[in-house]
Image 1 (cartoon, each protein chain N blue to C red):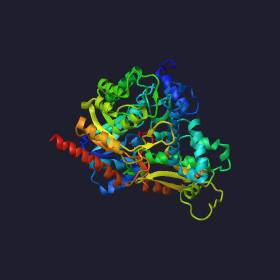
Image 2 (tube, rainbow over the protein chains, first blue to last red; image 1 turned 90 degrees about the vertical axis):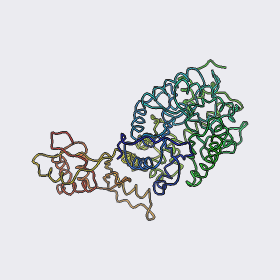
Image 3 (cartoon, rainbow over the protein chains, first blue to last red; image 1 turned 135 degrees about the vertical axis):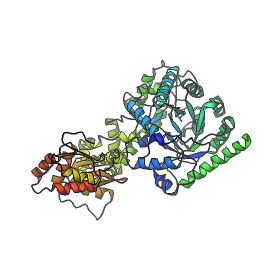
Image 4 (spheres, helix red, strand yellow; image 1 turned 120 degrees about the vertical axis):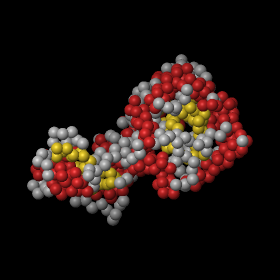
Length: 288
Length: 261
C-alpha cells in the first residue's frame, strides 16, 4: 500500500483524458494504453478496501488521476453529509488526485437521496447556500475543489439570475475552480433556449480548470426539443464547435471524454480523445 | 404564478413529484412548451432507472431466480418503501432481503431472502478494509502460551447460516449447471471472505461455523471451541484454525485480557 505522504500530487495536463469505467479497468491495467490522464468516480472508492482500491493504486501509479464525485449533493437544503465528506477527504489524502470535483446540483431532501444531479433554482438563496457548501468542502479537503455545471430538463418559474450568472458568481464568491461541461452548456442551450456562446463568454476564465465532453441523446415525439445528457454516444458536431470556441476563449485545458451508458471499446474513447487532442494542438499552435 | 418557495420547500415538492407522492411541486416548474409534470417525469424515470439498476448489480442471483419482470417490479416497490439514504449508491439496497421476506408474491420462494442476504454480504466483503494476515511463526509461538488466545479475523469475513441449501442455490442461480436445481432440503452455513481481489464463498459444517462466529464476536479460542463442541462433539479446533490461517483470515491475536495487536 502506498503511503499518502510519499505520493506526490501529479497535476492533470492540458491534454485529452478519458473517464475510466469498471469494464475498461483490467485492460488499462494490463495494457497501459497511452492516455494522458484518467478521471474516476470518487464514490466507487468509498469502500474501505478490496480489489477496487488495489486497481486505483495501480492506475494512480501510472497516470495522473482526477476524482470526480456525483453524490455530495452540495445544493441540498439538508446539511452536507459529514460522513460522505470525511470519506472523500480520506480518499483525497490517500490518492492525492490532480483535480477533485462534484456538481452544481442537489440530490437529497429530508434525508431521502434521489441519486441524481438535480437542477437548482437560480435564486440568491440557492447561490448563498452553494457558496457556503463549496467553502465547507474546500476547508475540509484543504485544497481547491471544482464544481461542474449540469444538464437539466427543466427550469423553475422563480429565478433571480441566469444559469451562467449563477455559475460565474458561485465560482467567484466561493473561490473554487470550475469544471466546464461544454456538452451540458449545449444541451441546456437547446433545452432552455439560451445562447451557448453568451454562456461561454460569461464564464470566469481564470477559474476554469477542466472541460468535460460527452454525447447526448434526443428525446423524441415531444412538442419541444429535449436533449438528454446520456453519456451514451460520440460527442455531437455542435459540441465540438462549442469546444473549439471554449478553447479559443480559455486556452488549452485538461479535457475529459465521458461515456457511461452503452460503453464501447476503449479505442472508441481514445478516438474521441484524439479529436479533442487535435483541437488542443491547434490551440497550442496558435498560442505559440 | 405561485409565490416563490423556499429552497427546502421546492426540493420537497420536487422529491414528492419524482417519487409519486403528489404533483404539487410541478407548480414551480416552467413548462416552456411541455407540461411541467412531463419534465419532472424525465427525472422520475432516470432516478428510478439508476436505483433499480443498482439493485440489479448487487443482487444478480435474486434477479436470475425471479426473472427480470418480477425483479423490476419488486425493485420499483423497494426503492419507494426503503428510499436511498446516502449519496453513495454502494449503500443502497441493504434492506432488500427483509423487503423480499415480507413480499407476499415471493412467499413461494422461501429461500429468496437468504439469497439476498448472501448477496449483500458479498458486497460488504468486496468493499471491506484490507488487512495483512498474521506471521505464521508468531502464531505457532503463541499457541504454546498458557493463556487462551483471542483472534482478530479479516475485516472481509462474513458468515450466514441458512435453513436452505443457500450456497448451492446461489451457485446455480449465477451459473446454472444441469436441467434443474436438485435440493435435498438441508441447510447450509456459508463463509464469505475476500481472496485476492475476489469474494470467495464456501459452505462449512455447523460446528466450524459456530466456532468462527464465536471467534468473530470476540470469544477466545477455548470459549469458541466449547460453543462448537456443543454443536458437534467431534469438532476439530486445530483443523478449523488451520483453514482460517491458510486463507489468511487471522490478522491479529492477543492473549486473553490484552488488547489486540
